[in-house]
Amino acid sequence: MGCVFIAKSRQTTAKEVPLAELTLRKYEKPYELQGRELFKKICLSLGLLQPGDSRDVIVEVFQIIFEAKTPLDSETIVQKVIETRKKQKLPLLGIAPSNIRRQIKRLRDLFLVEKVGTTYRITENAKLIDIFTEKIETFYLKTIVERVKEYLTVLSK
Image 1 (tube, rainbow, N blue to C red):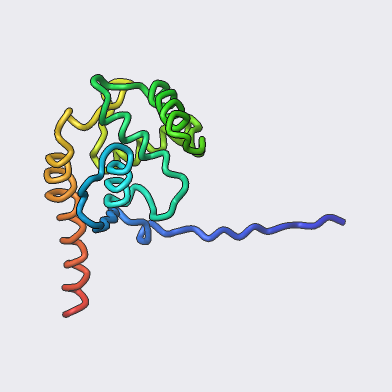
Image 2: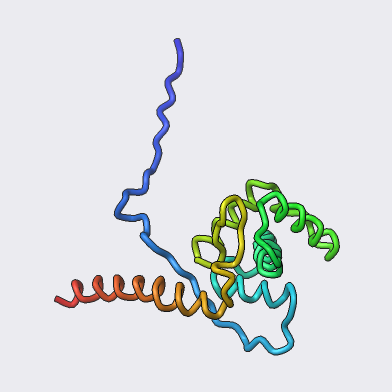
């Protein structure tokens, strides 16, 4: 006699998967912040990093791409992340190439980084404030707010 195991999986229906999602946080004004601490606050403010999260390799990924004079491939980004974290005596958490690529994808999803061939750079080599204003605030946030208003309008009928 054998045993039969029936695995139940809870699938999320298509209606429950968000079409867009954005987390924004407000912190104290950025007086005196620079370098890694400034990039960390930006990542926290944009929802790319959770408060208290020790897996903060996205900070180095973002800073390395931002400070690069030319577009970088993912292997170079991985090497520079490892070098940077060793130099700053930070734990080597999240440095697997697959995780670095996932962090790059998160930056791309927020329109901060773009892929050019097999390399990555800050979108259109633009200033981050311009990218935020044009892509996130004007486009991304606006569409999310409009959809929430549609739901609220239906509710108030």
